[in-house]
Image (cartoon, rainbow, N blue to C red):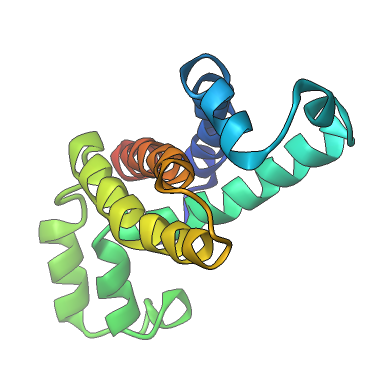
Amino acid sequence: MEINFYPVFVAALTTLLVGFIWYGPLFGKAWMKETGLTEEDLKKGSMVKIFGLTYIFSVMIAMIMQILTIHQFGALGMVGGPELEAAAQPSYAAFMADYGTAFRTFKHGALHGFMSGLFLAFPLIAINGLFERRSWKYIFIHSGYWIVVMTIMGAIVCGWV
């Protein structure tokens, strides 16, 4: 089992698409207030650099989301990884024949994506926010964004078979 890059590249776009809505019409004004940014501040900087790096980082997140949402990667890890797959015991091939596509649905991926957002992104953002003396509103705006994005990413990378 190898990483499928098509869903990774598509899932990586969700950070930009959701961000456009989340930090625009939904929570844009509240986010700017909580961060102390103004419309003028947002016009500064290289948009190509910001969006380009965002997409690259999003590809990295989507790659790990495949490993977090697709259980078969765990089975592959048990035999030592892709380079040792050919030398694995016959029981591995039998297992993959029986369960190679088990739990490979958009719904299952969304569940694991949601859990990843809730139990990884939220605590990371909350810890940083607490030390930066940010408000809970700030923490919830950013955490909510990542929970939504990781839910969608998980659905895409797991359900795309």
